[in-house]
Length: 289
Image 1 (cartoon, rainbow, N blue to C red):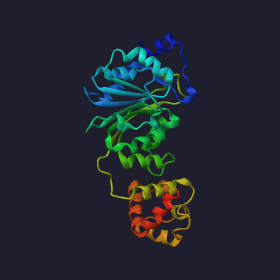
Image 2: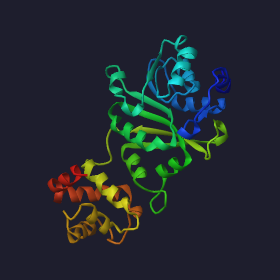
Image 3: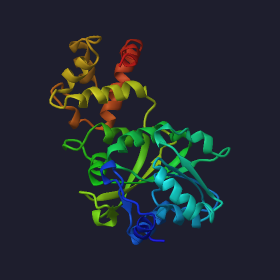
Image 4: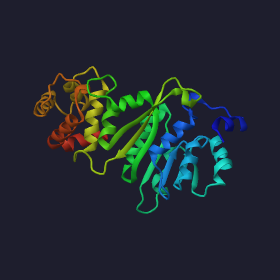
């Protein structure tokens, strides 16, 4: 049954203010599932299935779908509309950020993640997926265009920042296609994009990840500061400005550059240099954040 018909059948109103925007365009639904390319027997976790349009298409492939939904109203509808017809469906009433995915993974299996992600929680979900990346092969997400722009932003642009670097360090990313706001109900204020993330089996560098993302956090924490002041202030006086300046020069970076001018490889180089020189001290600082 079409999602609009389901809304009428159950006399349900969608809370757009909570980031709930159902993907109702059936052509885009099929296009998105084609991107996911589900196969019989594989395990797919769907974040926020809503009324189950994508869910049912996934189930029809024979994939084992674990649909994690926080809204109890949707859970009840999914039980009534899908649970009886598909033995390969597992419904979980929970906040995805509080779910231990390991509980649902068969031995030696890896997951695909699928989700239409609300704007306000996108960054938190990306961090959650990165934290579970050792048993996630790939993720297929629809996100608001602003988030996609931030992830794919290039150095020197306003959108470039921590999210751009974080995702690129842990995953290969592909912006598959754009989705008009008219494909959703209720209609959001902006368009969306479908993304494919393939988590890296081998990271770009063997580097202290805590230190790397401390450096990135300090650099972008106050974008108007040059990188020298941002880093030396970020480490709260544990490193002198002169010590930071020496390592910046060693990395081939100018002290008056700003974080938005640095590429991922520049931050990796800084993390390696700072780690060799100050690792015990900087771990103490990082743990105190």
